[in-house]
Image (cartoon, rainbow, N blue to C red; front, side, top):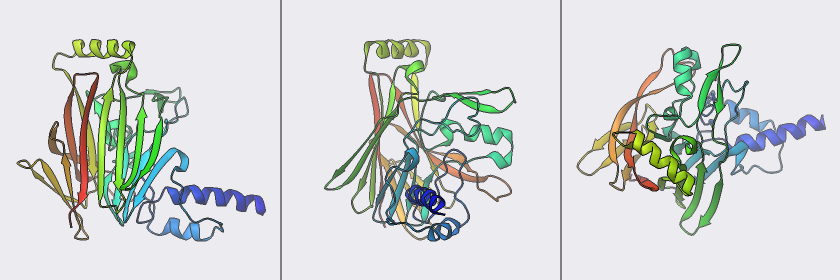
Length: 310
């Protein structure tokens, strides 16, 4: 009936904004990419006046230019006694070059057992920033024995602006305020031709009370606080680290090459990672780019870029 069609149209509008270049869904909060072509086939059955994808579907933010697609989680996660599938992915993003995934999240490890599932919900399992190996939320068991997310960011302000050279997305969360007195702010700039993504990850303590919390955290950490920015790579991406130039070459299976670089203020490394793929018999081995930098001042930051070089 008309009511069902109206609901289907609303859902289809949201789903169109959540698709990557190959038509798949991003891997946030337990979602998988889905079977190839399955979502496209479903959307074709829905009559809609507008086929344009939303830029802010369901709390996510979508950047698209040229053949590049970026999707970021820009909303607080669901918390409480029923939050058995929420992930700590605020400010995390995924990036595709055409139909090929480059930057991903580890994905849901639910089919590989409890340990993999619970670790896949942590902040470090996402292409995101983590301070001192600590999550910016708290997981705990509920009465039924399920692990639920109880504490997480409450404020996740976003700002989206357009410029001559592309689109800028600024997002932040307050998940680290209680422990470290800082907010994590991430800025993504996607060029108008889609051949460059520039990013900044910033940690800032602004008020006197926030500075007091940061000072205390620094005093309690003998070796100093360190932040790590994780960029998990899809297993089909071949990554080569050039230590001398401080860059990582990313060769895609379609012959395209992207280059990752940073401003030199962070330690750059390639580390092992896992990719949880639906219908696979075991987790796939892959790699992640990791930037490590000290958190000492009221404002600490690192800037980085992904540029299409061929």
